[in-house]
Image (cartoon, rainbow, N blue to C red; front, side):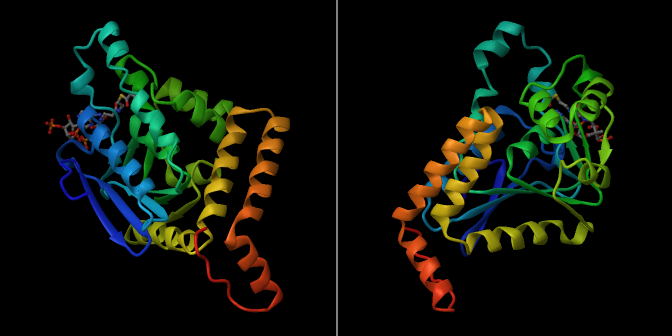
Length: 258
Ligand code: CAA
């Protein structure tokens, strides 16, 4: 965990914090960083000592997008065969909750990476946008799909077709971020939320996250069916027995994670 070149990883109890660390280029997301990030998240997902993950950058930049210098000379066939965004799909498959703590520039791939996370805490300084149009392209790591679902067609069109950055406050009003706090607190606030989730029964957290994400790519009928199966499955856990007994016995539940 400690030998990443582009990431800093710290652990505090059940919470891991992963910090993007290419400060000289505002955390531009090159292939090396993304490879490390996906490997790191998958390792944390398998780690029974971790129950929630915080993903952050620096105060100045969560990430200023995909690495433009790495793409500038590429041909379409090279981009196709590199298939670098396929790596991003693996983030979508992480089972543990990921809380983004964003500040400063959250642009292009940075905005798309933020939207891969489950809950977003933003500093008042965050500037969020999809500026790809300004360099002759368009979002390629999910921006047209996830931003549209998060903020609706009108604002997504405006942001993607003009490249306009929105403030953290505007992003919160549009439903893109959960909470906006002063810059001194954004990371702490995300870690606090991660700790709160990490104290909940982990199998229920996992199946609930899975069911919420299912709503993005299925019909309501199939989604309800999926939800119901996950709900029934939780009746096979010791934590369900414990949770309901603790409620009836008026005591605090002790979760085992099974
Ligand atoms: N890729 C590569 N390098 C980047 C970068 C990026 N996306 N963003 C910033 N950098 C580098 C700059 O080149 C500069 O490096 P040098 O010192 O070696 O010149 C360093 O980071 C600092 O940047 P600036 O000097 O530009 O800092 P600034 O404060 O004046 O401006 C900024 C900050 C407005 C974020 C500006 O850097 C910028 O516009 N960056 C590009 C944003 C962008 O277009 N992102 C979309 C990328 S495409 C994409 O993400 C596709 C996708 O869908 C995945």
